[in-house]
Image (cartoon, rainbow, N blue to C red; front, side):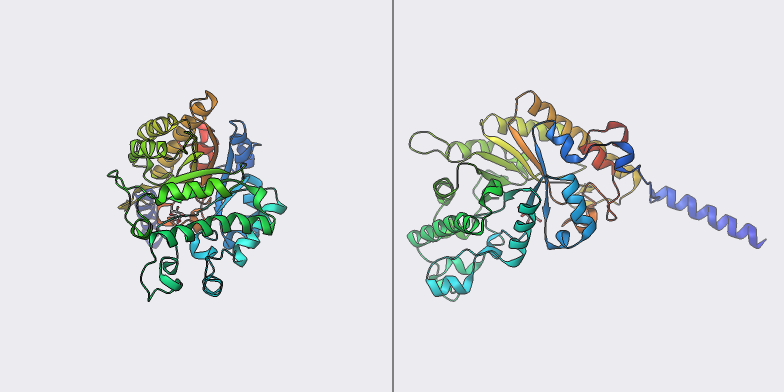
Length: 377
Ligand code: GLA
């Protein structure tokens, strides 16, 4: 009797769990499936492949090893954003903006150099994660905003200071791309209003590229980077056309597509936007790829069904990009994932990365590596 009861409880639980799809499906390991790494696969299409990193990654032996094995490019998740590169005390003391890396940035740069990792610079001019004090008289937020001329001088110091600091520290040659402006356009085709537009005006965008072009070495491509790019393709194409010098030469080299996507998005629609942007003749890079389960307002649980959808989504997306790059339709030299592990992603509630939080491969990984039979089909 007792045995029967236990058996029925067990059966009921099994039905409930499988109904919810929460059963954990363990995929074959990467080594069982292929002798290639992610970077091998992307190299076959002329691309670097990157991930964002922080100290949390570098200080964890297992994660550090995975990054070095699978990727050949990094972007700092935070350490090179203006909030962390502009030194308030020194700027106050010197009366001009002083750029100085913190210990996290220096340690990640040293790590990249010792391990031949290329670096994407992220980011020079942004409305977010930028200290408020840079906009005020005397670098003091109690004071009024400075005028246009002073703010242009400060912008120039920020940009020149970044490249000088990289050179002084011996890391400039690691960089192949740099985000000059992050997220300046709205989905309705207007310029985002922020402290840059308030102090300088809408032409702050052109000035940023003008200064970056002046101070960055030729070896570093200069990027405009944005999210929801699939809804902004026409806006961005028109915008980049304005970024030319008196001789008609582009001050910009590439458009960064953040690609913070969801499985509810439409891959074909996304690739159509990529094609529109490619017509500018500029380089394109995918800069912050993640694919969340569900949609922004509605995360879905990591069931086998949803994880398979994610795998197929990634397979189709990367296939579309590889085909376009191989045929010369787009000029794309790198794809960067915004992390690699679900456990430490900024969007972990959507399970949006290649590996799960124990670093086991997901269908997503095999989708990215174009191994169709393990991508969730
Ligand atoms: C944007 C920024 C990134 C990062 C993400 C969230 O996409 O460009 O630097 O802040 O948001 O991690």
